[in-house]
Structures are given as structure tokens and as C-alpha cells.
Length: 247
Image (cartoon, rainbow, N blue to C red):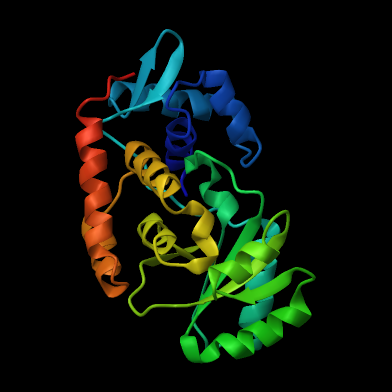
């Protein structure tokens, strides 16, 4: 992710506005660029109407939205690398529910690292993960079983990787795009806490803050038999947006 994309992403997470100093404080945690670089980019983004400045606060522009990217933490990256070393010819995809927490309305009392692999490799991957992590490793199975184990815990969930899933490589790690995550919320048993009204909230926040490739989303939704459900949510969100004042 470039510095410009990082700045836009930080501002996009604050629809009620964020000051330039607060943006820089967030960025200093992850980069070592001089302050002049931040200010130069911020000023350019304002001139280009990619960021709106109002009453000393910065707002995400409705006309320009950043692309969402997973930001794998050190533990996720380590788990991915160790797993890839043991099964180098198996395609992997990994992310953590922490990555979409800013999009949630109600935060669940558990944390999931979700690893997707080919269906015929799930058993082998579960066995390997049992030796790689102290966290409980479960298959994406019956949600009643998951609901008993999940509360208050950090779990690793292994799910089947659907062919032609929308993914991208972040720092050498294959991660889902936001389009994949939005569809998986409607499908995966492990994400049961994010369904219903919470799914709508996540979709609405995602569409409000980020650029969404609807064509890719619906194509993947069709492969998971969730196209109609996804289309319904998107239409409801678009209708709500036409009535929403800004900022």
C-alpha cells in the first residue's frame, strides 16, 4: 500500500471527520516518512477533491474512495509462512476478523483467524495447524458447535477455498479482497455472528468508505449461491445512500 493509499484509508475509517494531526499520528505508527510528506500528500488530496476539508477536519470524499486491503499482523504473517513451508504447493488465503472490526456495528466477543484452502487439503491443514498454534483449530462446521467454542476465545478456522475467489497478495501473503469477505459473511458458519442486521451494517459501512467492485462481488456470490441475497443488500444500501446527508 502506498503512502497516499494509507492516508486515504485512515481518513476513510473516520466518516465523522479526523484532524490532520490525528491522521499523522496514525501513520507514524507504520511508516517513517517525514511530516512534510504527509502534509504535501494531504494538501494534494484536498486539491483533487479526494479528501474533503471542513472546519479543520478531513472527511472521505464521496466521489473518491480508497480500496480496502487486509493488513496482516505479525502473528498472522508468521502462521501463513510456517503453513506455506509445510504445504508449498497448496493455495492458501488468510485473514483475521480484526481487519473488518471498523466496519462492524456490534463487536463480537471472539477473534477468528480464517484460513481457506482447497477442500481436499482441509484435514491435512487442520492437523498441521494443531502443531503450529496454541489456539483452538476448527473446521468451518455447524454453527452451533462454533457458538459453544467461540465466545471469549481466539480461534483458527479452516474453510474451503472456492475456485476463482477474489484474492490479492499483501506483503507476500495471499489475502481476501473486501468483495470476498462480504460474500463469505453470508456463507461461512464461522461468521454466524456477523449475519442478519450486522451483515447489513458491514455492507453499508464498506460501501460508504471503500471502492467496491460490484461485478466481482456478484460473480463470487454466484459461485457461492448468494447472488440474490447480495443484490438485495446492495440495492437497499444504495437506496439508503440517496437519502443520507453529508457530511
